[in-house]
Image 1 (cartoon, rainbow, N blue to C red):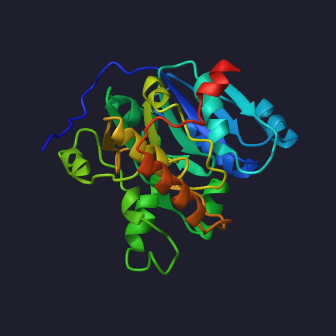
Image 2 (cartoon, one colour; image 1 turned 90 degrees about the vertical axis):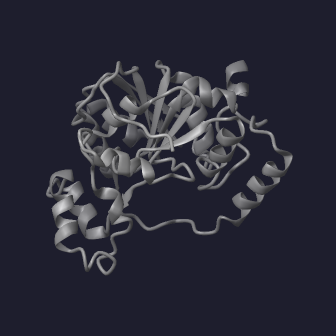
Amino acid sequence: MNTFVMTPVSRPKASLIISVYNNIPFLNAVLQSVNDQSWNDFEIIISEDGGHNEMREFLSCFPFKHSWQHLYQEDLGWRKNTALNKAILAAKSDYLVFIDGDCVLHPKFMERHLRMAEVGYILGGKRLKLNNALSKEFLEGKKSYRNIGWYLTKNIFRVRKLGIRFPEESFVISSNSFLVQFAQLRKIKELRGCNMSFYKKDILTLNGFDEDYSKPAIGEDADITWRFKMAGFKLRSVRNLAVVYHLYHPEIWNDQNENAKIMKEKQKLGYYRCLNGIQKWINS
């Protein structure tokens, strides 16, 4: 079995791409966590699937510690993949890290992704899904990564009853711990759009995200998972190394059958490079 040891390396400059849709309180909490990162040689790209005046006003007043860009497009329904492709083209770095605008970052999040970056590998993690009560405390500044581990440990036998999902993803392993090897045993089979990273040139190999998907889920993560694998890339887990805390909100979708059908048909064709992708924006 191949293992990976976290050692100090020269870290490539990165672009942190944050997908958002008109939820300013959530984005405020996320950006506060971005300001608290232990490693800061990166830019921020706010990738808004829509164009709302309130968002522009908020961003113009936010105390960013990093260089940043705000990209937006006309709100014509779910077009996250289009927004992501445009963000990739706008990125000023060679390495891209992706999160969603409802995911608060642990302070080591960017450091871990950048220290583990390697040509030929796609990094992927998961997320702890907070309940409504914990999310409110995060938004109000009463809870943070500093005490979330203790809270979960104290309530270990009531976690499910409290509505907290995937609590095992909340524990952060130190880079100096022998448990780093344990973390590598926790494989990842599918990418999550809220916690993944790769080189810009690698996603360009796939022609970016497939814009044939017009509904949430699958198109922005499961689809690129199988296409990366078919193109010869390997997945590397950052579970318990690069941790995110997903703020609670009601899910506005639950039927993935349409997207699943689209992906199945594409898999039958066997082309890892999508047809309706980033190339058209390069040529436009």
